[in-house]
Image (cartoon, rainbow, N blue to C red; front, top):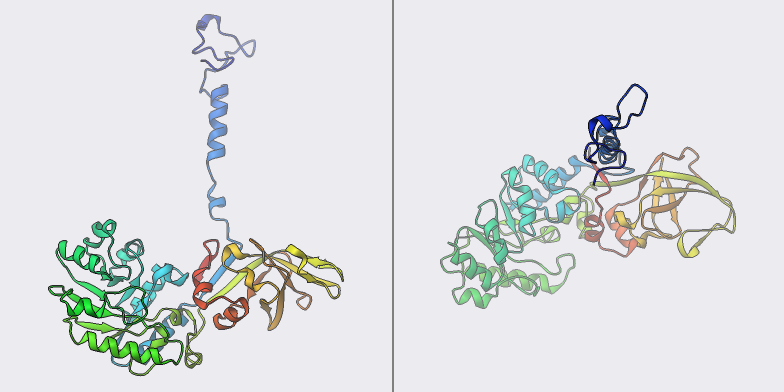
Length: 396
């Protein structure tokens, strides 16, 4: 059906078409000035995002300390003694960005990297690194696994059989020594499960390395006994906390949390540096009168007239509700409390003692991992990996 007022498909002859002006013809559909042309221009205008909009700065950012990351790896490498020191970069490099983390650590000398699944491995493939995929191989993973850009860590007899059926190329194997999570059993290995496999690294995982408990030694001894019965080229047991335990390094260590500033054991606190700083912009500065409340469910009441900054950050970004009424921000050495309940996109902070902060100012949230974990009731791992996509990640 022709557009209203359009002559070109309406059956009206050219000689009979109407004129908009005494001396001119009405434009045809799609011509400049025609109704369809006007609509097309409107659609183009609505569907095109100007470059200046695409590049709009984010109102919250992570300042990531590349020097601290590398120094943490070097510290853990030194603590690993004669063992090689790898790096767990799963979960997008514990929230920091796997590609940037891996690139920096590879430049520092790290040669072994660990991810959870094949999607994560594929993201690192352009870097040409040695990558092990901790979750092994599902049937759906086989096209990627046989492409050769990463090694599977085989965890079950079914995965072992699947890998053998595909040709049995180089692989790693996880053996369960007491955690009862992933891994083949010592009995499976004794029964010949790994016969014929080209096992690069036999590994296990400590359940309680962050505590001084007898189970650590039990797992170590079980692992050493099993390792001696295989043809694996290397064996690996220690995670970040395990590196701090004497006699657990074997041939290869696999730190994760401590690389990123986490402290799984108190004896690492003096040598591990924080890598992540949270910063967000103030959307509004307002005065809250004595007796008034702030936030959902009115959990905070002003004891006196209070200057409050409403900050562009919330639990959707990984600053969780556990920080309600107990988190802090800092400015010029002054600690400023989070007041009221953390909401999805906003946090309120008492800035009475920071007269220089105003709408548009940036403010840093205190996020040293051991302290933040204690305040929020969440683990250091959850805090790091929960950092959301709305942060602009800026390496410094």
